[in-house]
Image (cartoon, rainbow, N blue to C red; front, side, top):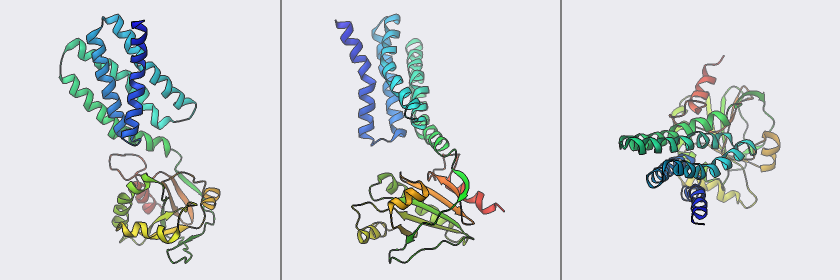
Length: 283
């Protein structure tokens, strides 16, 4: 009976830690990966230190198997490739590193393991996410007629001879607000380039008050231009956008980029500056 309870507790350890870290980090997988893999690493070390090798290997398998099954289900059934692939790869690696430390008793392995988990979380995750989510972002498709206004309810028309950067956001999108400093930086970088025009595009929600919405970003001190969609349904029907933030870039009146806004210099793929610069030099 004790062995049975021990197996159940072991199996629940990583599930509980994943839920806990998801809660305290608000779903930030960059930090979650670091915390989750580090926790797995130290639990596995403890298992190896307090059990015979055969028993320890059994318990490690019990420890990681439930989470591996959950990640596999998310991967294959719910198509959560970008958010699960690194967990699937590095969760078993964390247990191997734990055994390596147990065998050689070298503290350098601990620092190397934590350093590796940091790289996985703060460098690899964002690159994998952007690469997977934006693999079809570079397009050359028709731009449908969509109605936008400024804060005075004056219709906004886009110039076809300009590169138009549209960052779509909603008042309920917390991630959108964390991206605004990057949007401001990008706006200031291209402010003197007359060929690039950047807009923050608000998509209205049922509970929004237009007057209050127009004041939100101004009160935060952002200087980039703000425009407003008149209907969330029109955005979804015409542009197929139903999750935020979302980035669309137009050139010559056509959609040339349709994906995620990313400005982090650690991200090698689909960084907004590289996309804009590519379109600028394109004939």
